[in-house]
Length: 271
Image: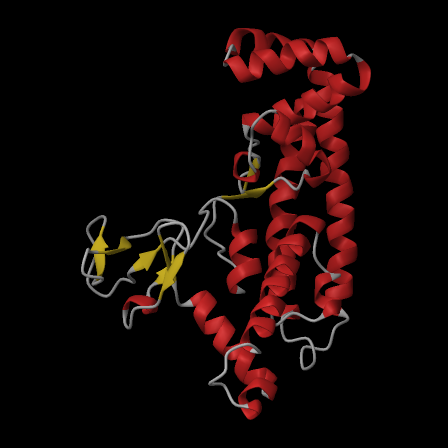
């Protein structure tokens, strides 16, 4: 919400799309406020106040069920942790309960999960912070979203670990795309192997066509690294006084860049 238009242009498409979705939700929020009769005109015209109220409601609340958000004093002080120590629940009377999920040493933070612990980008787009303890990041195969959904995967399944490892689903999506471009019949056979959970048949495909998958992955990683270089140069050229999110954007891009570098090294070692 606090990003400028120039800030969006310094992010990879996947992250930019997430951040723009938050901006769209904020715009809807401001329009809804116009219909609330007890708010005076001075309040409705105070853009900074409205932005503050929206950010408080968004970042200090917890989801109850599938639609309801609640803010509980003190409970909203819990920060996010990829490896969290507590969870927030509400009892039948509406009381907020913060329960430890493991032993917590005295003086240690009490952290909850605010979202996907294995990818910092959604948290960055929604809450505006970078979880540098995240063990992985989405592999940024946004251009293969159709293939990903076709194999019934989600973004959280397609990960590059910070150590350079690649999740099996990434290999599946790349090969599924390669087969679709060259032999739809083979692509359908591979699809059936993935969907049915036939690991033997799936691995047979991967062994036979691994060179094509490897080339596709290398090309994607190399292209993404070049894009990140360009995007970070743009962010470095922004004045932090007028673009206050520029520094955290640079940190996010650096996190993703370093992860992709380790993946690139692993891929090069494969052949």
